[in-house]
Image (tube, rainbow, N blue to C red):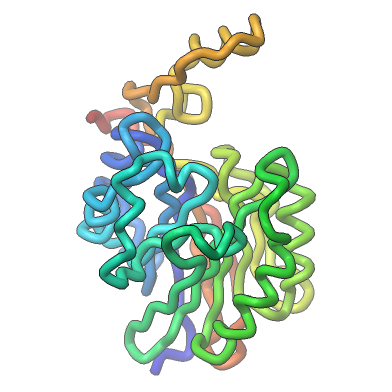
Length: 271
């Protein structure tokens, strides 16, 4: 069994351009970092920029992803509602959603004898405040995962850096990494916390660099200017940005040895 593993974690994939960019660069980045696992947040990968379908889950798997995480837009496409009926464990939704919701909030992946546990949680500040507490939900999930995993990583889909940082400190020394998703802007605060948990406030995204968080600019500006709703449309024009981190973890301790950001700009990728 390996003494350490490397895991690539990709930020929110937005629309067709984000999918094509992931397809083009995932394998190259895996080889570059000699990664063992790939985890990607896919809740915005639908053509509308909201939701995911079974076909898109299979698309990510075909292009090297071991697991797809999600967040507040997981139910954006009704096609996904029955996905878990066959027991599929390659897509997770936030664990602090109500228990009656389809799917599970965590999964355990095994490769080369190493068990990687992945937990998905959603924040409450400026989001769905009626969700279960992500801190207490983490405690519940870890009571299971710590007995079935060698290394545990957390995708925390949340709005504020304070809530993300708070969870990271709360779990410091209990998991190998806590990474933020949802805001689509990669932060520069990656580090290993004092007790061995890697952290970054946000992975960023895979999508149109010059859009508004992957969407066309004008409808978003119209909403800002008028406070009236506009239909947001996914930006399809390059360049695309592909961003995330590589976390290196010690299998014996289950803690992080390092975290490194990656950010690729591709001017040629097209849908």
